[in-house]
Image 1 (cartoon, rainbow over the protein chains, first blue to last red):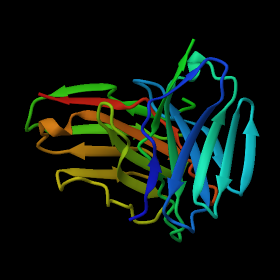
Image 2: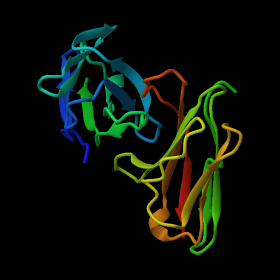
Image 3: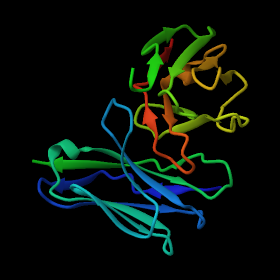
Image 4: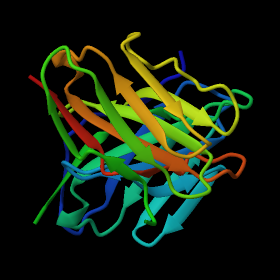
Length: 113
Length: 115
């Protein structure tokens, strides 16, 4: 059973701080990793994708991938109240032609003004 | 439209009735997913269509659930003899045909309430 695990939270950080969200996955052969944000009552939206070991930066967001340790993280710098949402980690395990995403249950983030 | 379109946005039905939920993906997207999300819960995978390949139906919770995708575009999720536990938001997502992508674009969802 391929799994993706996240701490459910809530993770609470003050405005302006760095929020660190973590995700571990069970399939060592996984190649593709994604972070989605879901506001309450809304659909998920993609915020970051990462395919290679190391860091990938996009504005205030940095995704970090460590395949040897089987974890992927998302850092949000200068956190804003508008970042308060649930963050979902998703992984495509190595399974030939089946590109079905495996999802974590999400981490709830609260940024306090 | 430019995004994934789902209809109806809200559906209230009586227990035992059949319902159909429709998803119109982004033009050119060959992959299409249906998910279910209950209040405060994670995404529950239902079914996955990828191009002309046989769909992955491994997430359908019972034989009351079925889905089809006509002409590689519009998809319909059908729930027969609805039960109260079927109440949830049903989300459809599509992605581009490039080889290795989990970059999904979600519709706004169809909220189903079974009385």
